[in-house]
Image 1 (tube, rainbow, N blue to C red):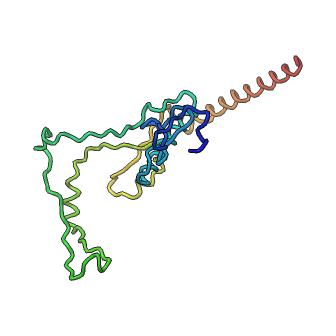
Image 2: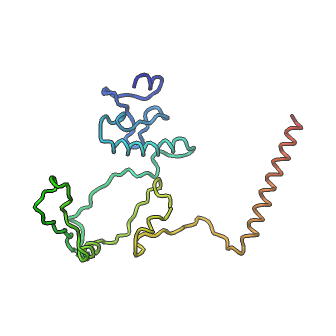
Image 3: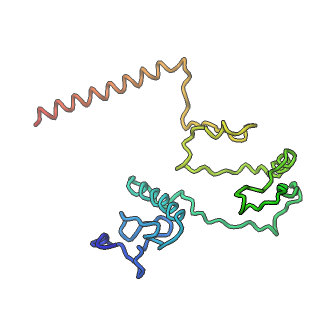
Length: 204
């Protein structure tokens, strides 16, 4: 690291990497975050990208007053379901469909062709019927911006967005009195600020 960490509380390991929290990537110096090879040593590029994303979330929360680095974040601690204890009698146990192999005298390594077959229409229908339709979904607030583009790519209303308002809306015909009220209130605040400025100048 050279002299990059001199004068800070950040600690380095014997191999030269920086010690940091494995979840938030925050070092012993609160405003220094480390990830990627500098934290874990040489690993896959995708690991560094994932660490960079999580560190960016931590930094964003760190600079915002009153934010927690850990509250409400997915720790990605997945546990496999106990398949032995699962009750599956009420579900469809249709086996997974297998595409037919393309008959060819050539080998994929020699021809650079994909010799794998594709599902027939009937196989596609059977495979889609295997979905249990649990309805569980997780939306990443840092990736989904609510543009609705995904809803245009799927048929049969497979994906749809529902607009949820935190406050009660106003009907179009009743909008004018509400707008006028807000305008009067804003003009009043502006007038009060101007009066305060005049008095502060006179006192000075």
